[in-house]
Length: 199
Length: 199
Image (tube, rainbow over all chains, first blue to last red; front, side):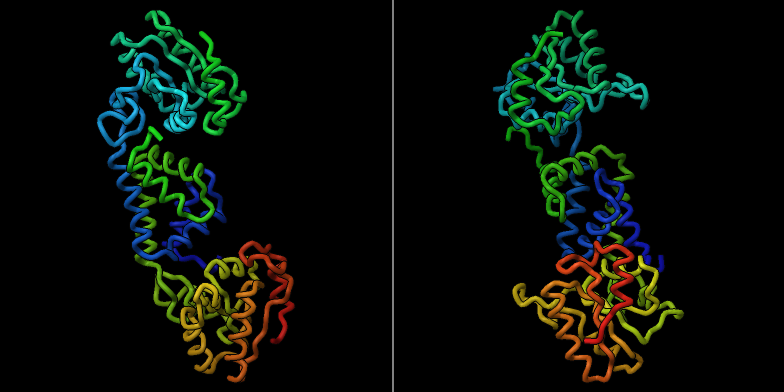
């Protein structure tokens, strides 16, 4: 191509790396950034830098937070005896949208996937067992995605947790099988919470 | 919402400001950035900062470049006597994809739009007239989008340029009327170049 300006090309390539952003979208986003007033692009850059610096894992549930405890673990009105185990922070956001769940979460940051070389030691499993061993937990709800990896992770964890004398349940199959928890609507997620079954 | 982490919320809001990025996509992109290794997000941030710092307008054609002259104006094998006038840098990229045009461009950086308060003085019109007055130009091809604003801009410029004794042509309506130049395919754009008509 005759027309290549290195810094622009690099910016387009960076946008192309983002999930769901193709060649045309990357070009549009890069040109949009160049067209913005300087303070707008600085705000964008600073939001990235600030988020990368300040956001870390909650010391209890491993969800994303900018403090020692995430807002959910820090909330005393939440039932700390029921832990809902999810794969990703986005799943917490999805479940919170139902306004139906008043206990706490545990974020694994992935699912067991031997194909990708991800075993339990790469996930926040140790932290979950520490919480359960502390003895305040009555029930663990498995809310991983209804995929092969999600099911395998739920099965693996239930085998670890059941011997500790804690009830382990699974979200009901209100969630469309093979789908993604993030895209389930509020009603479906509420049904899935209500109809949870013991593993 | 019970679960709000300020730096994450701010990052999601920044992504939402981008064109074509909705709430769900903004959330996915923000969480993706947080999940990346630090050097990846630094490369992204640096690409934005570098592009904003280095990219400026070519001193001849006003297209985006990181040097005094853009690669097209600096290319001696290009016919400098024919200028193709476009509204935006993305239109140059689209026309260059045809590999059929071997002359030069002029980027207006917008179209005349009284509704948005954009008159000729907000566009790179003065720079175009300077080029034409230098006396080396035989033809000006109007390649603004076939929209109301694009047509008005082409008509306005042709009335300015024709009295200077320069041939003014318009891209043929091979481009779907009401469409966007950026999304025209290569063949349509080539037809439009071949069938250009005098204004």
